[in-house]
Image 1: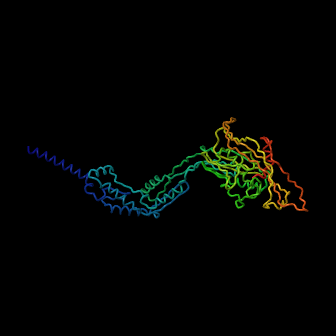
Image 2: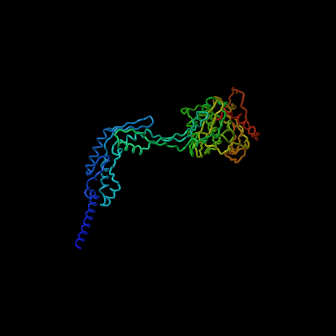
Length: 500
């Protein structure tokens, strides 16, 4: 019986010793290597087995520093190459925390946690530090290469060149290029593990533009054209009309942008390029700098109306203009009368202006109207207002003493003019069908009295006055002007060459 017990105890002892031996074999690294790296541990191919953190850091750093001297990296993209040598870099302090992290992997946690970490490696205890992390300056060199290759995509876009007969141009999209920086760094790291001299193609990706040519085709069209004649004007007046419109030539008007004619054209001064021509002052045509600019504003105004642009401010002339219908003129004067408008569409609008020897033209471009839609102007003549005839004004201040001196000497300063009432409409058509008629103007051009200047000195004995050729015009009682002949009458009385 004792012998059986002895045998059983012996077996148990042998098994226990075996188990303990196996446990010691399994946990020997864990038990005895708390301050050192596990056997078989390498960092970037360098054996750090049995080394503490400081020793391992020094060994790895020395190896990398030695390797750095042999490094030659060549990057290739299309017909371009970039070459860097180890002398371009320094060793960074990323090594210290990296070695510490590897060390902590083996030596943190309880006994079983350490065992599980080791088993997860499946016997592979090789660790690698990224060369792009530890070589200071390598990332900067990579960034230089990236900056030379990276090309942003360009969306297709519309450009407007007012100097061309067809000013709208549709520009194709351009695909961009972007370097896959993470893949490039990874490729450099992997290549340097095998050799200190590497040549790599730079990996890139194509960048697609968001707007393609087909997305913008026919998005900008001519919305309107309007012209007025200055055929009978003197050259200085023609110059002023053209000069003011040139300020708008090629203009882009953004959505919701407001534009002022006066701000755009600037002061009507000789310093600003304007010449002397007739202007209206107190109902009289007199010479002034910038005469003719109102024809510019009127031409622009009518083009804007036909393009369905919102008008914020417009004013009539004192005297009706012969180059445009009643109720469709646009008088401008610095300080108190402007032409202002606003782009209420969701796309940019553009203006082109040009001229020949007889006419000036304004074209407005923008998003297309609805299919078949168009606008037309319409004027309703409401009638003429009889003029009050002439008024004789004594030359009390002597303003005209070189022309009239004595009572009974007369100088006509201006003729009386009928007044007119008219309404302006904008009619909207879809095809041939009138779908809307909008009253936009209801204007009264007041009748103008004639002014005759008379001298103020008494005629003394021996003085004979020349024959009086100035005929006094009495007030009108009625007028026969109607829709059919008002334009001819205005042209006769206010010829376009004198209009402001």
